[in-house]
Length: 375
Image 1 (tube, rainbow, N blue to C red):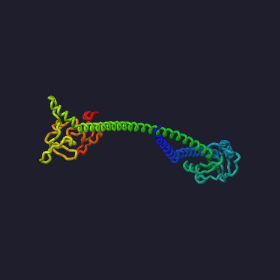
Image 2 (spheres, rainbow, N blue to C red; image 1 turned 60 degrees about the horizontal axis):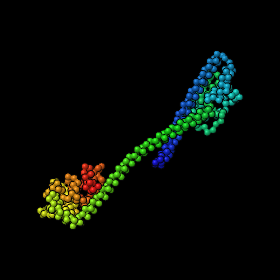
Image 3 (cartoon, rainbow, N blue to C red; image 1 turned 90 degrees about the vertical axis):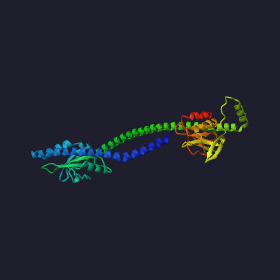
Image 4 (cartoon, rainbow, N blue to C red; image 1 turned 30 degrees about the horizontal axis):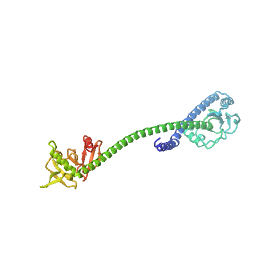
């Protein structure tokens, strides 16, 4: 797999950020909200239970039912309920337990030291209870918290609702495990989706880069071939020019032939100021038109003017040595220094000496230019 480091770094970064967010922010918040809601429901349920028992017991006392009978009925109803999340106890104002799920604790002193605010208020809230439960560092199976109190009318008895701390911790730990499992699976799914997205994007951009690279390589290869052909053609022209004897023979033969075309000019008549200046064809670098004036530039960089138009000048030049690059420019083969790509399909010619204007061969003449270079 390409760029495996990207996937490795992405995975590590995602895991670190995901764990940081989930463990420090999201998970504790969800657990707190869920636990607080659970405790508040327990408080509401306990409040209803002690209210019902208090009202029923108060009515029984008002109807002259013996107190002992009422206490026995409560004891029978709550017996063995201390394993549940909420259970009830009854004690008198002196702190002696009258009824308890564990009958062995009946007639003993209520020595429970609660850290909750139940010692001051008759009912606590879910938020307060959650803060207290989470602050307990250690507890045993008998640990409980009084979460609601209510007196029985016309008696010295008080009904207390207890919260089983062990059961609360069990429910909380179970919910924590469920939350961790859900977020673990969600994290795996998100990580997989993230890696798939990165893979799709990387494949897309790799294809774009490959296409651009291929085009660039083709362009470089074509330019290399073009410059190589230019060098070969320039060498051929140089060899042709140095072979003067063969040229003289060819010129004599051409003079004898009736249908021979006119020999290209060997010199071009130009002006510098008001002085006539003939320039040898071999000394010309390029010719261009500007503001309807034809300029002839020599190899040494000097510029002269000509009376003839660019069409007339090109008609008198040897087509093997000169090429009409565009409407404004004629270039000499031996003065071309380099050919470079220009835009998508055009070419740009760099001359020696450096030309004063940009010499561009349009895409319509590129094939003609290549053929002129004998490609």
